Each structure stands twice: as C-alpha cells, then as structure tokens.
Amino acid sequence: MDRKPSIEMQPRQTVAEWVLPGHPDKLCDALADRIVGEVLRADPQAQCGIEVACAFDHVFVTGLVGLDPGVLPGIENELDGWIRDTYRSAGYGGRWDPLPQALQIDRRALRIERRGADWQELRHLSDDQCICVGYAQDTPRTGFLPGALWTARCIAQALHRRQRADAQGPIGPDGKVIVRGLEREDGVFEAQSVSVSLHHAETVDWLDLHRHARQAVQEALGKDQVPEISVNAAGMFLCGGPMGDNGTTGKKLVMDAYGPGVPIGGGAWSGKDLHKPDRVGGMLARQLALQCVKAGIGRRVTVSLEYRPNSTAPELVQVQADGRPVALPPGLRVMGTREVAQALLAQMREQDFAPLRSGQLARWGHFGSEGAWAGASAILAPCGFPTRAWTADEQPPPHFAKVDGSQVSAG
Image (cartoon, rainbow, N blue to C red; front, top):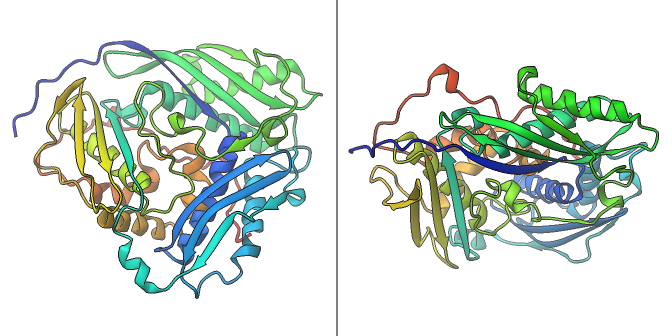
C-alpha cells in the first residue's frame, strides 16, 4: 500500500486537565467500575449498567446488574464493602471526611436480576446506540495522546503518590491539575503553565503546600522542565471531596477521552460491562486510529464509529487524517462486538480484573501506552501493511504506574 506523504505537525498551544482520585466525580467513576469489575470477575458475561452519585456521607448506587443465578449470592451485602474500600483507596478516612465506615449507602434504585444462560446468546448484539471516537497522534513520548492531557495526568499521578505517602498529613485526597503548553513540530510537548488546586487541612503551611505541588511537577516533568506553576489560586481549599461538592459518574468524559481538542462521542465508560458499545467501540476506535498513525496515514488521526441498537458491529466508520477525510486502510479489519468483548475480557481475566476493581482505569484513563489492554491491543487492530518501528528514544513511558500501596480487597 502506498503511504501518504508525511505532514509535519504544526506547533500549537493546547490545554487539558486531570483530577485526583479523591475528586467526587472520579470517586463515583471508580465506585462504578469497582462494582463492574467484581461482577465480571464472578460472571464475565454479566450485564452491568451502573451509575453512582455521592454527596457528603451519602452514596447512591443505581442501574442494573444482570448475572448468573449461581454467582455472588450475597452481592447486596458485598456492595457496601466494595464501596467503602474504594473510598479508602482514594484517600478518605482518618482526618479526611467522609469516613468510609460511616457512609450511608442507598442502593434501592439498583436492580439485580438473576438470569439463565439463554440471554447470554444475545450479548453480541448492541443493547444501545452510541457514537464512539478514537484518536491517536504521532507522539510516542506522550502515549500517542495530546501532550497536555498526558502531562496533566502524569502530574496528577505524582500528586496522588505524594499524598498517599503521608495520608494523614496536611494534604487531602481531592485536587485538580490544568496544563497549558505547546505541541512542537517534532512531537515533543513543552509545558508552559501549570495550575494546581489541592485540598488541604486548615493547619497546612502555605510554603509546604507550594513545595508539595512543585516537587510533584518536577517528579512528573523532570527538574529541567519546570514551567510556571500556580497553586490554589482561588485561596484555601478546606472542604474537599464529597463534603465540598457532589459527584456523579460520567462527568469527566472529556478528560477520560482525549482532552478538549478532540471531539467525543458522548458515552461514558465507567460503570459499563465490556460488551457495552461505549466501551467496545471506544477501544476499537482508539486501536484503529493508532494503527493508522503507525502506518503513516497521518500524524493526527480520528476514527468515528456509529453503533445502532441490535447491531453486531459498527454501521459506519469514518476516518480523518490531519483534518482530511480518508478511507480506512484495507489492511485493517473492523471487528464485531463479540470479538472485541472477548479480547477485552481475556485481558482482564489475566489481571484478575484488577484494572477495573482497583479503579485504575477510572482514575488514570483508558488510553496511553495501553498498559491495561496490552494483550487486547494486538488482537483488536491487526494490520497487513508495514508500520515504522519506534526508536528507543521515542518509546513512551509506562502509562499505568503503581500510584499507591493499596491492594484491592474483597470488601
């Protein structure tokens, strides 16, 4: 196949944000995925559509779980343990309210259905409609993601690591990061300005707070690349997490996808099983975009997939490479829902569904160097055309770094 002439990536200013695991919206995403992970661990063909909301010490779990009659006989009781454990791993407990053991959990609107094997025969059919967008750019150093998004996530991970190292210190579990910078022609992202907002105790030393943020930025970017940094520009941030704001699943869709510079389809990932078209289509679209970039089709590639109810595969595939519509290369095959779901489930089984159960995907993103989906990635986008090999200097850093010492418990 003839390769398209390479188009240089023009320098442009970009911006993106990331939030810490204690942020109420991300807390809800992790709670929803914890339930999905535990249910799929017991019954990989189970159906899950979970929504979670939190405010103060209240947690509301709604939606549907459909699973085999013989598994998780005490799921109603186990749910409470999973929720409390997820709050703890986000950093709540001790001096940081709400206390996991004091949560008031309302699951009256959660429907749990016991189903036989016959309904599983329909799992290859889309049970909803959605538009899924996948994106990749020729920047291996940033996981083929926009540099501002990647950088904001790296800083957030460093902040979370530092907070968990002194969990009962003066820095709390909630916080936000905004990064603004320049995507250079050579694909390197140059961070120019960083804004950090950190939840803290009333007794915090303001200089220590600034030092905490600056050291996290240095840890993420390197000491030679420290940009302009502002810390808690709005003043004191004493009331954090669900005690300061309500949270719900699916409110950080732009962050979960590719940042504000890339259109999103609109569907949330967290809280949904691995047969749901939002998750199946989102992962497939990302893999197709990656393969197009690696094949030299374009420097920035967006793939859109349209799923309709009762369909077995996308009904429409659209590809944009460097702003121009192109055909999907003939060496790429668009797989059906069943094949994609099987690949994702196989990869999760190998990891005991830990990326879902621990909140790893919900908190730190579904894309990057594809750490949680490494095995599935090779299956989802087989290509029959040559792709260039990345040099050692271009290899992206590991995306899914272990950010705390917590382990996923059974509740």
